[in-house]
Length: 241
Image (cartoon, rainbow, N blue to C red; front, side):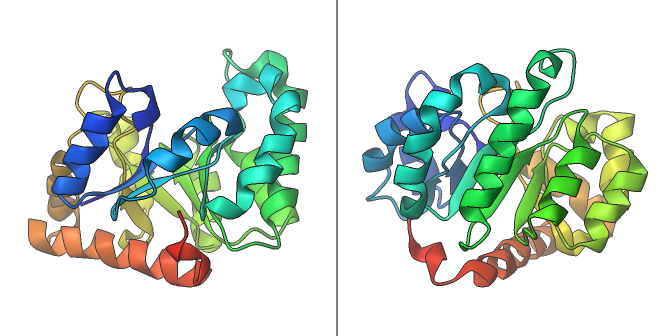
């Protein structure tokens, strides 16, 4: 199984969580909200085979970004994964819109000449997020928990970006509609742990197997093939923590 977006550093016992995922051979990409969080966690994941830590600047922590820029640059070459990053123009994040745009531009400028995979937050800012990816010619990105319009989704699909699907999406009519529009070769799975009460990847794979009219084993293989294809785009950097 593959979990491309979770926050194990926010668990009460992150070591227990990632040790269990390692035992189960679940490929797990842990997001961070700030580079200082990556700094704290980086050495704890070095000896795991299936666990990786991403370098993030979460849009809802925008007021803290400026003092974190130097750390972002300091650690960018220690990981192939960038996240959680992006924009949030919902009611919760709108007051920091301009700071977010500046920070996201900073992130994209830092990685545009590097082989990295981004995990994107784009709530109520899907179109703007896509426009900035295009402007900076970013090639490898995953839209986490996409909830935007179908027209913007189709533009994202046309550029070959990926989407990570979680259990909350398969429980709503809008989420199901969105998933049905995504080509299966661009689908990945996530838990967004610990923010969802039900974060079982198996439930997502069962849903996808029914949607795609394949067996659960086949749906799991499709997800694995998708992830491996994304990794090939960033080799040899993909072997880094």
